[in-house]
Amino acid sequence: MLGGFNNTRLPRVDIIGSKTFISHPTIKRLLTDSSYAHALDCGAGIGRITKNLLSKVFAKTDLVDPIESFNKDVMEGEYLRPERETGKIGEVFTMGLQDFTPEKGKYSVIWNQWCLGHLKDEDLVEYFKRCKEGLSLNGGVIIVKENLVAGQDCFDALDSSVTRTEWSWRDIFLKSGLKIIHSQTQHGNILSLKIANGRIP
Image (cartoon, rainbow, N blue to C red):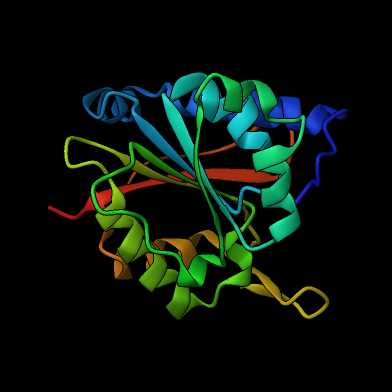
């Protein structure tokens, strides 16, 4: 969580990398099939990804975050005022992802960035199963963008979060009934970008 810390190179590298990623032909085809209609920004914070990426690509974006003050900023603050006034902001949900169920068949993209380390593996599997049902029936993708660790998963007792290995993520996707259709490491920092689509055929 950057908490609105917008004036460093990291957000620019981050957004450019994400724009490039969703332009991949396989992803673009699925998003086109769903008409770029509705995005969901998970663990949205103050809405940095919504403002700089999702609202520029999708017709409307819903946001979910457990911190009420961040959501109040989204709904009433200056940062997303232009997006609100142009009808780009949809519903805002105040809850943890372990309790959140996306509306069935609603979303072209469900975007998860730097927010899944606080979910236990079993909660994450169930969350992805619910996200799978939330994808548009015409096409849609679940995107996961998280830091990776080599060797074995690393638990941080200070903030009760876990940084997972690539193989842990692959195992979680498999248990969730998801299939990886594209993945890449973002250049310019240590982040990894992954995508999982809907049901395994």
